[in-house]
Each structure stands twice: as structure tokens, then as C-alpha cells.
Image (tube, rainbow, N blue to C red; front, side, top):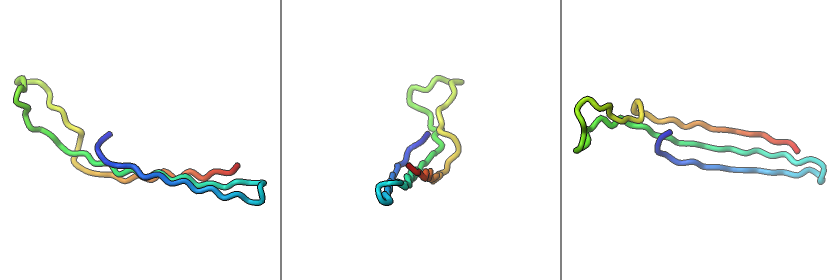
Length: 67
């Protein structure tokens, strides 16, 4: 998808050995950039590679759990 990094966290709490509550979180930081430079061995008319529009995104995935 792109360059970047990921951070993960997990929390668990037990209540009197009857119920366990949990919360998992994932944080992703991703970057993309345009790369339209011609490589040294480029063939005329050959499509260039690009990751897409220049930008970044930071989605969170939060997963509550009961067990």
C-alpha cells in the first residue's frame, strides 16, 4: 500500500474470573508519493510506475472484545 509504520496495543481486564473485556487498537501511518522520474534504462512509450497521488493517511482500527 505504501511506506510507513504500524503501532499496536492490546488491553485485557478480567472481572472476577467470569468475564474478560478487551480492547485491541491498530494505528497505521502510510505515505505515498509520485515518482515520474524516467529510469536510466527506460523504453519510450513504456508506462511509468507510481504509487498514486502524493499524500498520507492515518487509519485506526479499534476492536472491542468480550469473552
